[in-house]
Image (cartoon, rainbow, N blue to C red; front, side):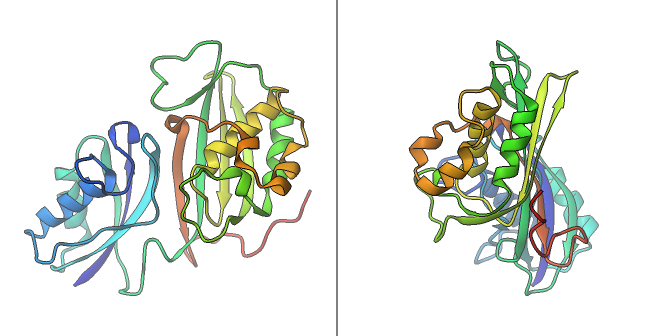
Amino acid sequence: MIRYKITFIYDGTNFNGFQRQPGQRTVEGVLTQKVNVMAKHPTPPIVVYGSGRTDSGVHALAQVAHFDFPFDLPTTAIYRGLNSMLPLDMEVTKVEKVSDHFHARYDVSGKKYLYRLALGEFQNPFKRNYTGHWKYPIDMQKVTHALKDLVGEHDFSSFVASGSTAHTNVRVIYSATANYDPAANEVSIEFYGNGFLYNMVRIMVGVVVEIGSGIRPENDIPRLFQVKDRNQARLTMPAAGLYLEKVYYENEDPDHPTKLPPKP
């Protein structure tokens, strides 16, 4: 058996999330079916392991998965074979042969997420599947200040949705930045951390934009860390604006931090 690592992108609009579910169209389900077709339906069937789950409507710019394949094919053959069968809302961008010890999920050292937020009184119909929407004016200085409060190692219990199966809510955020694009009238918020909880990014964005619009006090994030109360964080921003941007593995990225950056 040859272990292949694939990097792939998908438009999450018409997927019911990543994880396989009976009777539902999911990213994992579609990918697993195509891999098994390529392998001529072996018994037992090939299992595809992703770097992590994304929710219904969430997109990926560089999701990662691995699988063990019964034939030793060139990576170009896997690349072309899968892409010839995948639906138009998925595409494999890279294929690598990896060690039997590599695991797409358990070897992850960090992830980067992007949230796109369209501003304006009304939702642009051409953006509704690819951005969140916020109708209130935003002070970007307040947003930047709020994001700095998220950086570091914290208990994110106020920022995790019910249904999480994580053993601990402690996570490390290495960086959190925001940019405003006046031409598109969009705010892009990027989070880079060692891991993220269920709906954590969408909840963090909700808190940050409320701070940016003066709906919530500027220094409210440290209080939320202390109270550990999901209800006090309030909003979960729409899935359409969320993108899994990058998955990091040890020794792959020279810029991957080995320790937290110093507090500004």
